[in-house]
Image (tube, rainbow, N blue to C red; front, side, top):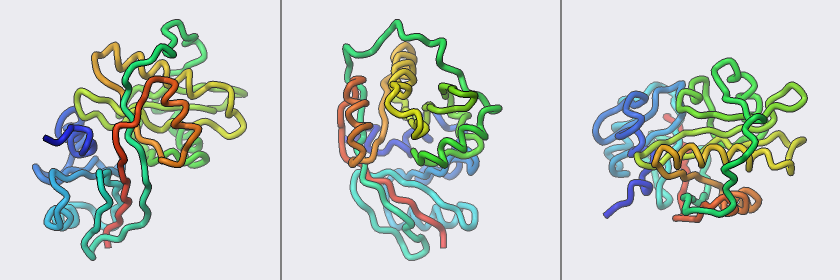
Length: 228
């Protein structure tokens, strides 16, 4: 039986994120200004053609799959990313007394600064309304946003932590750890389970996530496709 995290985008759109979903029973994708993700109930040629038929012109989507995929000729693969999917399994390193005074709950007024940080650090897609997916936290230093992370996919009862990034000039200060610690505690308090995706060559990030209690569950492949 397939695990819900084997197909996290589709299962997110079929459960918690129905209000952000477009498509049909077999093909689902996020509203365009929320995030650029699409998922299929089954990754068949027919469903790729359906997505092509019902999606906007010149659109671009990211698809997560357990295996590398081929796409029909009416889609162009623009890039692929080899990743690990990591799931929280418990840790003694979580600090329940963490100083939350340094953390700022980010809102729509912060989106320009969030977008600038994402463009600089490239943790993954972040659009005008990605913040609507919820619970973005940041750290400000020297009057600018220097670190952030928040929620993205939500295939119940799991919640993905994403957009984990820190300005290069502020690395090594534990900012991502503080933000992630708070996000993990919040997800656990809601009786759900944190998970995330990370490039399989990002050794420093993987070590941080392992310290916080995440373990590699499986390999995962991101394929970025553009409509021809």
